[in-house]
Length: 132
Image (cartoon, rainbow, N blue to C red; front, side, top):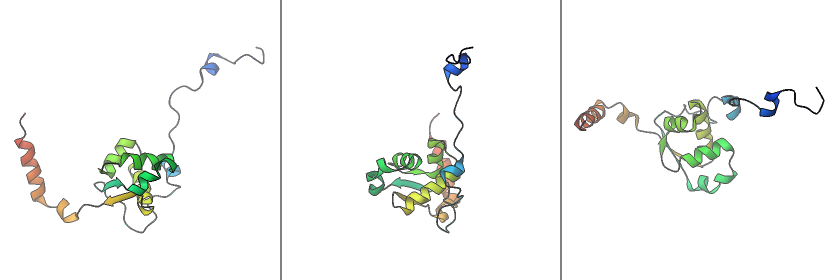
């Protein structure tokens, strides 16, 4: 085989399949929680982009850009993780960072309302009232 010839048909085709995923600890610089001492964000916490975040959108890193862009309308941390296909704890850490930089606003639900059984009963009754 000559030096200028490719070794095989696969060498010409390039890599096959998906590239390996980026490890979550690389996205968070090895951190498993945000910069503060507060507990991690609950799954149901609503996050929304701030005007400041939207104004610097094009200067943000890939993951930060995607999060701020996705949060133009409020959504929960869980929805954001699913939509961006990132690990939940990665989203929590990055969202806390973006909140500290004032690029995201965070709205934590009232814990009393989330444990109120009457709310669940009204939801179930409402679902039962929906016609098949």
